[in-house]
Structures are given as structure tokens and as C-alpha cells.
Length: 384
Ligand code: AMP
Image (cartoon, protein in one colour):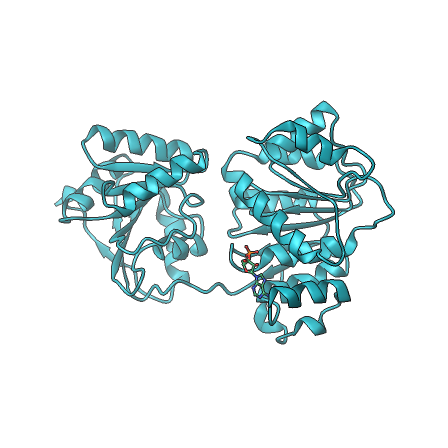
């Protein structure tokens, strides 16, 4: 499959894009000078009615990338929900809604935000009445609740967006998302945005999308040249001992340890806690206040080891992280680069260590070969 990257399209101005005067004015009010790379790629494709898979992170401007075409596509004369945006968290739903509201300043759309943890009353009134919502932004659980209670119908949906799709899957929303898709018409335009592209997402794309355009923006790769990259061969059953030996060899390490699943993260957290380490855990199932507490303790150095899943640690910018340790190897190069970029922040150095178990050897080889730098092999002291 051909992935279009930014280098293949010329730099555009908003005036070059096929957007309405209303959107153009709203963008000018926001003070945006030029479309971001993902907007430059996604806007024309979506405005042409094509399905789009966008490899893009938060901060890339992806919200406007899918939001502008949604606003442009809403037909004021049609009753019923025409566009649905599924997002993993309530905070993201609110952010997306706010951005769409700003962009639709001169072409108003009626929007409902449907998320869990919020009262039903206002949601119900946004869906009913003389001027019901045309666009719904929400989290899978609550959307499904509304569908099952008959308070939301999706049979006039023409645009569907899955935002931060990898994070939705990581939070266990895959079955809900599939069921929600079943409530929407087959004849619809679908856009999917994700920071990583694990196999499960490729599955969703092939089952639910129609020959999408694949778009990727060369990520502003974290500066990884100040990260010392090492790997250790280890027996799968020795991984926890190996991890402890790496941490114990340092005086005051501040380490993020990556695990692939929430379950794995929780289990390792319990083990290390039992062993007396100052350890915390960060995964997608935690509430925002729980996450904030853990992060505050980590920033303050009260937690020295933070066990995390990829998604929970996305974008973390904590200056003093000395070690990133891949307890489970990352799914792909991109995830590897993203993970190791959590250390060596703010011009400091850092170590990225990967524990390569028997079952990881092949997959880690693929990652190593794709990197432009050497990952040095070291021996664990437990095997000395
Ligand atoms: P997002 O990746 O969609 O969360 O957007 C990141 C931030 O960039 C948001 O605060 C947007 O309002 C802002 N933004 C989006 N597109 C542009 C643009 N073309 N120029 C300047 N800022 C933008």
C-alpha cells in the first residue's frame, strides 16, 4: 500500500485548499497562517469524499484536518445526526468539540458531546427537540448506551471519524467501536487517525473502510541521538530480575518501564511494589485524577519507577527521566522511537534499554535494522 508523506505534496496555504469562505474566515480569526502537514494532506482527500487513514499525533492539527470537512459536509436541511466522531476520552471529546465550534463560527453546526461520567439530561436535550444535533462527538461506551436506549440514531450518518484509534483499542473499546459501526450506514465516509498503526487497526481499516488514502506525516522525531541505546538478551522468565538489576545498578534512576498491556503493567507494578521499589503505574484504564497523582509523584521523584503502557505515556515530557526500559519490546520502530524519546528531554542525556526475550529476537531485529543508529548489546549482571 502506498503511504503518501508530506514530501510528496507542495506546501499549501489555506487559500489553496478547497474550503469555503466561512471556514477560511474562521481559520483567519484563529490566527492560523498555513495548514499543518496533516491538514495539507487530509483536507483535500476528505473534501473529495475519500476515506482517509492518517498517521498523526496529538499536536499535528489532525482535529481541524477532519473537523473542517465535517463542517463543510453538514447539510443544514437534513434532520438527524450526519457526522459522528469517536474518541477515547472525555477530555479529548471536549477538546474536539471546542475546536469544531471555533471552526464553525461562520457556518454553525449543532453539536452534542456524549461521554461517560457526564449527566444524561443535557445529552438527551442536545439529541432531541426542534433542532437536534447534526454532529456527535463522544466516547464509545456512552454512545453505545444511547444507541441501546434508543436515544441516539445513526442511520443518517454520512461521516464517521475514529480519532486516536490506537488509544481507543488500548482502552478496550474495540468491541464497542465495532458495534457502533454496525449502527451506521455502509454508505458513509470514514476517517481514522492514529499515532501508531498496530495490526488491530489495520484490521479495522480493512473491514470498515473503502480503499482509504494512507497519509503519514514525518513525525518530528524526538532527538534520539542523545539517548544511549542498549539491549540485553534475557530469558523471558528472567525479565523482572533483569529489570531489577538494571535499576539497582544506578544511584538515583528515574525510569519509565514499558509494558505492552494494562494487565502486564499492573502485574509488574505489584511485583516491584512487593520488592520495595518506589513504583507507580500509568495505563489507559485509570481516571484522569489518578493519572495526574501518579505523574505528580513521578515528577517530584517520589516514584522512581513508572510502569506504563505506550498510550498512557504518549507525549509525556518529564525532564529528568534517566532511563526508558522496554520490558516488552515495542510493536514497531515508530513506537520504539516514541518510547525512547521519553528520556533525554530538555537537552539531557538518557539511556534506553530493551530487554529482548527469546520470543522477541526476531521482532527486535526488525526494529534494530530500521534504526539509523547502533543499539549496543550489553550483558545483564544476573548472568555474570
Ligand atoms: P490537534 O493535533 O488537532 O490536537 O491540534 C493541536 C493544536 O494546534 C490545537 O491547539 C489547534 O488549535 C492548533 N492548530 C491546528 N491547526 C493549526 C494550524 N494550521 N496553524 C496553527 N495552529 C493550528
